[in-house]
Every structure is written in structure tokens, then in C-alpha cells.
Image (cartoon, rainbow, N blue to C red; front, side, top):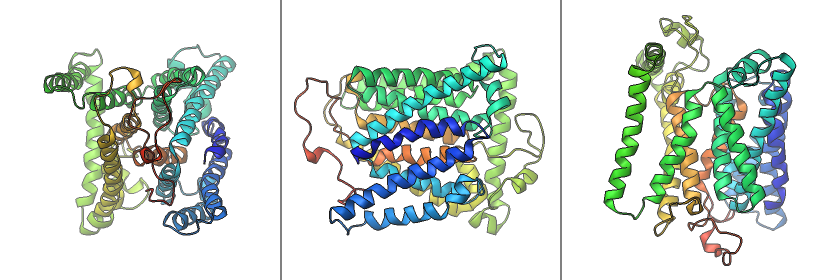
Length: 430
């Protein structure tokens, strides 16, 4: 798989094209090509090496076939709110499980690189349109000239995922060039997150990274230190909430906005309990019926009857797909949690507190925590096919593993034994 890494060079192009409404279909067509390539190459390699048996080969072939059959609705967005969105999450997840450690690092490097052309595009639009070069201009430019991802929250979700990927590429990289790329990706990602005006996009990456760092670095240390850090972790969100809802100059506005979001979450989840069929199967795809049921809740513009989504992934899935949808979501979450647990157990000894103590277990935990925080605060999977693929791809980091020791330096001893690395696809890999 290492020799096909250059195909990931399509990713920055895909994101740049997708950010514009007029070119997003072209970006999605390239996304289909990228996914097909990622699925096709392991099939060819297995067949060429005589490995024609095993569970991975038919499964990858099946998903490749499903991708090709659905290429038109994906590229032309004919099924934005339909089952295609879940197929894309599954495709991203399958591709992620096929990535071996070196390929994962390279892919994250391309994700880090992707934030740079996005910043360049905003600078170009600001220069052409006369907008000031400020964070406040980013949302204005996006809504006036781009809108490829739909609403600004979908774009914020994209740059959040790119930012957390950039951070861990920075920590896991060895060379100065790679670390410079990772640092640049983080800086550009933070700028875009701040400019999107999304609290979740701005808070999720650093909070997730801090929680993952604490979980891995405190393992094996004194109970006193663990308790102190635990109290600190519990205090930070409490103080943040106190400021946001009571002490901030815009506390009253914040309360109204977030209470409306909670009301939308309760209303969408309550759809399940409106009759027996909806509890089992939900209300179905689309937002027209939920808008009618939840018409008393204003959206972010203050308009009634256009709430659009649940502001919570569990509630959104429950409202649209009932208890069966919730079970499906829990199956995916269970797979991720079991993978994270296995990675956590594989980290032995006490890790150093500095950045050189970063392990793959910490990276995958931080990435999945960021996805989880977004899923709690918004409806992370809707409207954007690019985001759907990235959600599945990044969630699959929980099913891969790197050596549990700290990241090696250029003068470190020989590489880890094969037993420390995950099995190749088809040899017992998930």
C-alpha cells in the first residue's frame, strides 16, 4: 500500500473544489476516483500475490462494486439525504481499516496539507472582493461566494477534522519538513475553525487532544496526580459553562441559542415515541416532516418551521431511523471503543510527558474524541459527502495501531518487530 500513497494527493484538490458550489460535483467525482483506487489496489495486490482467499478480499470487492453502482448519485448529489450518506461513511471506514501504519501517517500528511490551499482560497476571495483580511471575513466569504459544503457548520466540521489530523501528523512525524507541514496545517486549520464561528470546531480539537494526552500520559502514574488532573478536567468545562451562560456579555443570547438547540434535540428524539412504527423505523429520510413536527422551534435565523436537523447525531438518527438506526450507530461506536481499548492496553510502561511520548493510541483516541464531541453538539454526518467519507476514514484509526513506544527519533534503534505492527489486510486485520 505504501507505493500508492501519492493518490492521496487528490485529497487537497477534492477539498478545494468541494468548497465551491460550482465545482463541488467535480470534487465529488475525484472523491469517487480516490475511493475506487484505494479499494482496487489491495484487490490487485492480493490477486497478484496469490492471496485470493480470506475475508478481506470479497468484502473490499463488495464495497468497490457498491461504490461504482452509486457513483452517479454521489458525484451529482442526487441522494444527499438518502442511504448514500451511510454508504460513504462505511466506504471511508473500510478504506481506513486497509491502511497500514506508514500509509496512515502519509494520508494524515495530505490532510494536513489540505488546510493550506483552503486558506489561500479565502485570501484570494478577500483580495478580489475587497473584504478585510480578518477572521470575521471567513464566514462572510464562504456564505457569499463558496457554499460548496452547504451551511457554514458543514465547512466547520471539515476543517475541524483536518485540524486534528494535522496536529497528530505533527506529533507523529520525525523529519523537520514533515513537522513543518504539520505545524502549518494546524495553524491554517485553527484560523479556519475560528473564522467559521463554530464553537465546536474551535473547541473540539484542543479539548480532544488534551483529554487523549491525559489518558495516555497518566497511565501508570500516581493516583494523586490522576485525581488532580481529573479535577482540573472536570473544572474547565464547568467554568467555561459558567462564563458562557451567566457571565459573558452575550450570556442571554447564548442561553436562548443553546436552549433552542436542546429543544430541537428533544423534539427529534421524541419523534421516535410518536407512534409504534416510528419507534422501530423512524420517520424516514429528509427534514420536511421533522420541520412540521418541530415547527415551534426557531432555527439559527429565528425562523419557524425550518429547524432542519437535530443538533445531535443520536437524536437525528433516532428521529429518522428509530431504534434500528440507534442500534446501527451503537454498533459502529462499539467497534471504535473496542479498538481504542485494545490500543490503550497495548501501551506499556509510563510514557514521557513531552511530545515525543505520542503514540498511535493517543492519536486515534484524540481523533475519535473530536468526532464524538461533534456528534454530541451537532449532526455531523449530514449534507456533505466529503465529510461523510472523512468521518468513516478517521473513525477507522481505532482499528489500526503503531508501536506503543514513543515516536522514534532519527538516531533511534532498529524498527519494531513485525509482531508490534497490525496484520496486513486479509491476515486477521479488521
